[in-house]
Length: 112
Image (cartoon, rainbow, N blue to C red):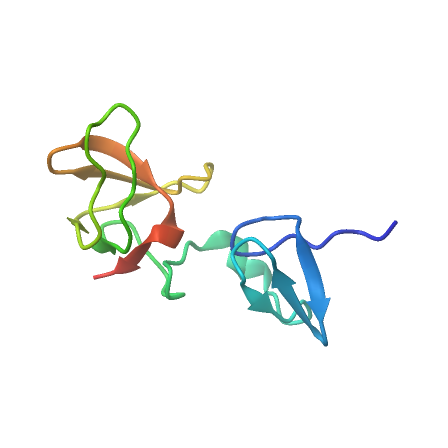
């Protein structure tokens, strides 16, 4: 059995080769495994691939359901002063008006 290559974007194990590229069947991210850098694990990027920093402002790009809330966080909601969390799958800690403190995944936001 061969070693599985995890997707660098979503860490899915369901990846496959397409020529000399690898493709994730979960998020459809394509990458060249020879060009993956070690520094990629030390940074958090948004949906467009822009690197995020503590204190940045981001915009939610799709409606996100919130457990225990009657309404979702709507696409286009601006979130200010984010904090990055490298230890969790939900790697952005923030406060959203009307919802309070919560954690978001960086793949559902873009840098403002």
